[in-house]
Amino acid sequence: MKRHLFLLFCALFFSACKAEREPKEDKLRQWMSDNGKKKILCTTAMVSSLVERVGGTAIECLTLIQGEHDPHSYQLVKGDDEKIARADLIFFSGLGLEHGPSLAYHLQNSSKAYSLGAYILKTAPQNIIYIDNTIDPHVWMDVSLWSQTIPSIVETLNTLLPECKDDIKNNAKVLIAEMKNVHEMLKNELHSIPKERRYLVTTHDAFNYFTRAYLAEDEEVRDGTWRTRFQAPEGLAPDSQLSTLDIHRLAEYIMQHGVRSIFSESNVSRDSLKKLVDACKEKGYVTTIAKEPLYADALGPFKAAGSYLMMMEYDAQVIVRGLKE
Ligand SMILES: [Zn+2]
Image 1 (cartoon, rainbow, N blue to C red):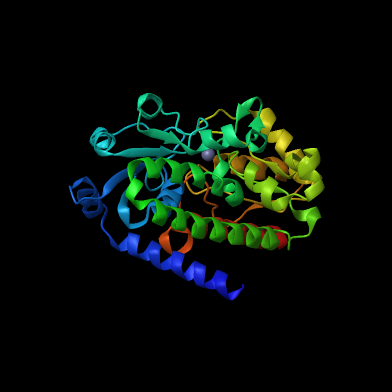
Image 2: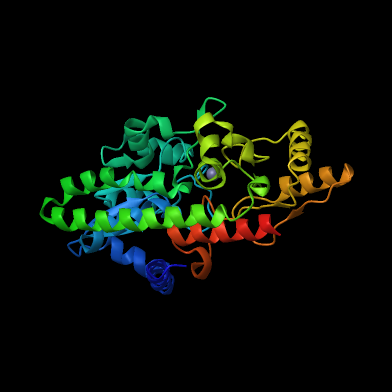
């Protein structure tokens, strides 16, 4: 790894360590207090990872959906209304990700809520992936694409903090450059897997953007055939229904492409993957579930995948190990 990238990951690691040491209650108490800082509420850690870097010391960020909770189906719990009322601004991922009715209602009806995904849809609609005519909301799984939301964070924070415009602009510039480096590094790492082995099967459809950005060949991105490199037994949300027909179709896919490792996700049941392994076994083919789970809709333990960019690097390493074996 190049030296500057090593230093970048050291910085990410220590900031994640700091966040881990700070008890959740203390952080919430501080965020709710009047200490002169603007209070920003972000739905997921992937959103707050960008917003807190761009806002810097002028803001305090709180992540609403923490731990292993599923952002697709998250419903407001006791205390969330107070957080929403206290926030000066709310940033969310959007594109249908946060579709739990109580949270979705607030996000759609609040004048202080901003969707990062909607900004991509408006400014670069050609980069949005559709699955069966539904928008795939997992845009953060392509670091380069996620970094394209930073101008909207800058614009929105500038309206709240006009006196901090220069700092916000500089913070954004540094973050965009870091994300560009990480994006290129991930592509290089994943392209170290021979292309005939770059076929990914995970629990739910969170890795389409990842596959297009990091597993596909350039010509496959141009002609749309990159889609053949990724399959998931569950749909765009892990709460969707799974049919026996889907399991058998996927078992055929695994055998056709010689896939020896399939991947679970941290906050999704492994049941569908176990069914896949069994279906392959019935047909006389051995595939196994990789020991380490991937992270997509939620961050992982702080030492491994405790910040957004660390999570992306962790996923890349797990996939490289699994598919190269
Ligand atoms: Zn998801």
